[in-house]
Length: 109
Image (cartoon, rainbow, N blue to C red; front, side, top):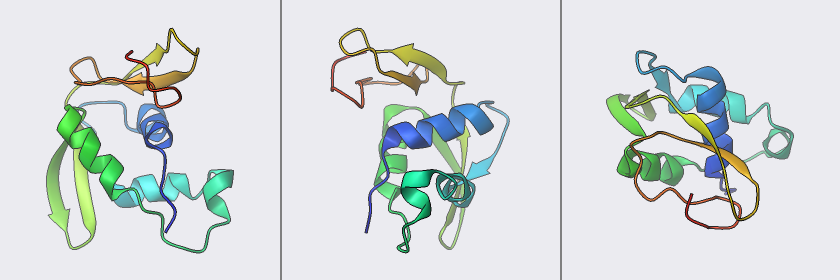
């Protein structure tokens, strides 16, 4: 089963759900992931549950409900774009997140 990069999920949330009052689900994220070329062609269900759990632990996401396989979330804080000083890669973090590291090179942000 293919794993989804957390950067892709963060970009989807930043572009579509970046408001602390907006509720969104893992199913909605999946819909956006299926529009990205590198995931579009895959026949398997994408595996990104672990990435969402890590985002919960970091302080980015707060789970608010669950219905069978669908989990609903809200953001604790809006995401901000950050650029890695080591490699120049841009990604998205919430100001309150712990352990911010560049998904490209692993450097502390």
